[in-house]
Length: 132
Image 1 (cartoon, one colour):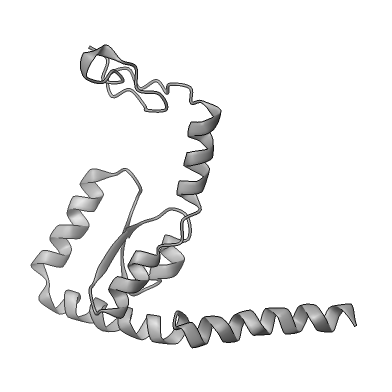
Image 2 (image 1 turned 45 degrees about the vertical axis):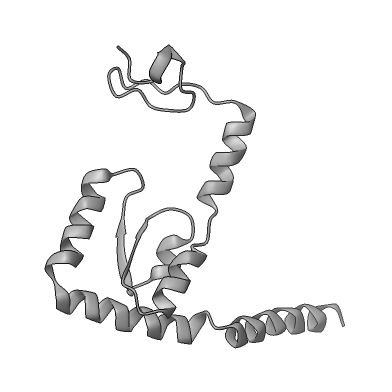
């Protein structure tokens, strides 16, 4: 059976077949969803880092830029790589502590409300100076 088919034989659109490695065409709505999904920023990662939780995120959208050197990344959809990153964190308490510390520092340096407000203000200031 082709693994593109869900239970009951319904075709799952936009999914690469694990048996024959063919990509099912997607509808316009599915493409729009995929585009939104790839543009994600990773606010949950910022919140986790603020709480001192070591993070793992996929290398898609802005997620790698949010994480920087304060967490681990994996190729989106690569379950084996995700498993390796999870094992890496579980097996290394010092790494967990280091990433938790770096994550908190990164949030305080880049993602506080005051920092975001200051950067937004600066963008508007530069725009206003260009039009004068």
